[in-house]
Length: 260
Ligand SMILES: Nc1ncnc2c1ncn2[C@@H]1O[C@H](COP(=O)(O)OP(=O)(O)OP(=O)(O)O)[C@@H](O)[C@H]1O
Ligand SMILES: [Mg+2]
Image (tube, protein in one colour):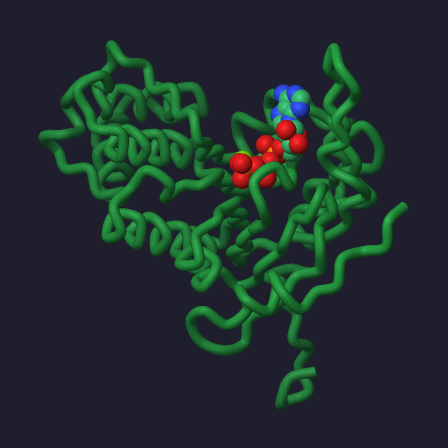
């Protein structure tokens, strides 16, 4: 309970936007199966930024893939707004509810930065009128100016392409924003700008933002830090103090779960 008898929930509504219920995922390969996620349970609320940390290979990208509805869990359930992803039209879910900012950004190289964003807007139903203006505004928000916006994807630096990909992911006005190492290829200042923007998407626009990252800067700005360890999702450390609090706590103080 908070100071005035209010309940200190991080929610903006009565329910979490996304819930994971005993989620497991195993990659089937020609070799032995790879259990990448093991019985992950947790909840993500609108209006919050979550950092998903953990060693390389611990399952962060796999979990984001499942949250994005790109594949279904091998067992267990992921619910969006209370409805299991297995019961949703997942193409529609991905197109309208989810903004994916992944490591491989795949811009269409023959289109300009602005056209890449406009195309994503068109697919999600932007009216033709004002489409260019909307694309330029989104690009400006990620730090791409009007001149750069008119250059083709091929003629942009890696960091610029990444930011265009981010603007493109935001075009549908998603409620769930999933970012995989969004600051990985960027210089410190640009990375800070992206982290700030992701914070704004949660705190101003009410999105639920989940960021898989090794970066302490990202984790220190998140509202909650979750740690993945060998496919287990360890309980969140809710951050109460200033920068850097929570990162070390989450990484060091949470006991690993007992083996199954
Ligand atoms: N397509 C695949 N087929 C088989 N195994 C996979 C595949 N993709 C990932 N894995 C395995 O699943 C486990 C989790 O991988 P994942 O990519 O989710 O880790 P991660 O935490 O995102 O790592 P990183 O920090 O390096 O990005 C690892 O053991 C990885 O080798
Ligand atoms: Mg990864």
